[in-house]
Length: 392
Image 1 (cartoon, rainbow, N blue to C red):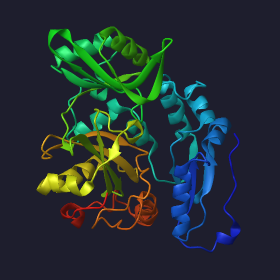
Image 2 (image 1 turned 90 degrees about the horizontal axis):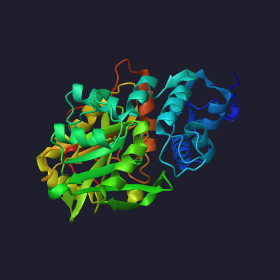
Image 3 (image 1 turned 120 degrees about the vertical axis):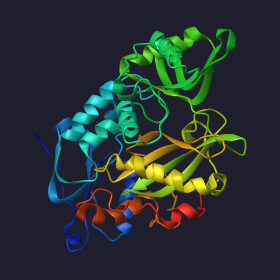
């Protein structure tokens, strides 16, 4: 087995602090943003180990003095081909193959001090398992018949059966191993057998493609064909929880939790059920969301920290928090292992990350994280960010 062994420039050896290694796609902006944060902290430039090398060489080894960070393997055609086995990056299919190969690649890394846990990554990238972990810990989540992979979904007929048995006239159908809203359908039924699905999936020539345009399907045969095409990759079903709104648009939040503390938050708004920014969603005014939640804002942050605490071996996660109508109740929709890409967003007041973006905050948190015997050494149930408005 061959491993990348390039070390940082020796001229940096005398610099104090952790020595980082990053597994990622070198050209990706995530790697660039994290590297910039490390340099800004006056630390040695991270050693970058390309995902493509890991996949080709069957692994990579790290020194005992290296703190190892994993970045998303996305946005690289060669890596995507190696993981999904498809040469068209717009294709939706292949997520279960991606999951198996990515999990194996993560486990092929040896040595170093990890900022993640391979077992936790496996759960974070399976929505059914992640939902079950959260539910067992008492974290509020949407009801789901597929939590813990209890109910197998082989196609649209199974979805219809579960909708009826669990009285779910409105639900989300998600790829178990999907990300960035890939393969997500917001399904709703009405009287006289009417049904509608909102999704970014486009069917062409019997193949499913991700699109940057949100579509609405009203023909059940078309909806069934999409779900049947997605089903071999594994499906997760959740009750569609009516969400709060801001300025006439539905809203949810991405809350970044670093070292157990909710440090950054952004509101995402949309005119469709899908709030992802690349699908036409827009950043909302966080101060307005905090004001709408009032005293419940503290509970919202606490829920996010409780969700992150279910994965104590992972330094940073992005929690998708769903506010109910009226902003008085919250549920966790998903937890993202690579949910920290929020450029130029600085930390919440009182969070300990004021003036720092998500990457700089993680760099600052690493010394305590790697030295503490207790997971989530920063977790606190009473920090000032709960009682202050923040800049979006």
